[in-house]
Image 1: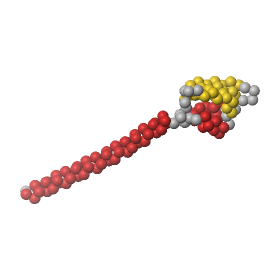
Image 2: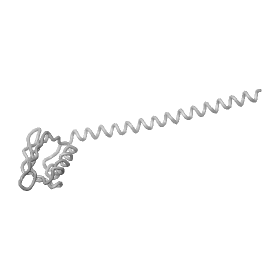
Image 3: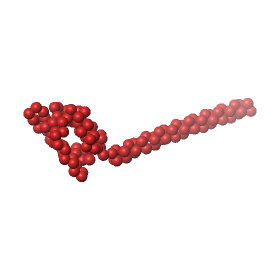
Image 4: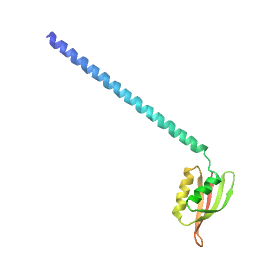
Length: 128
């Protein structure tokens, strides 16, 4: 009878040790995931800060247009917005360029596209 009691205590002790170890492993995993989450959160915050501080320059605008075979005919620079007029061969190229400009910190306010002699002519208002 005493041997059965000791065996039962050993089983209870073993079960308690296993439960404690599993709880420690779960806590450690939770801590690691929380740390990774905080690192990603800090990275996202710094990316937002960098994007907010970034302003597009006229040189970058011209280079981005030239890389997509877009011809800028006139650029009127204002305090808060730029008025851009130019020519493009394909409206999809203009759409891709507008998306690139948004990623670089500019915000298209309005734009228009009309058929010209040999290409499409566009008017674009950008907020910097």
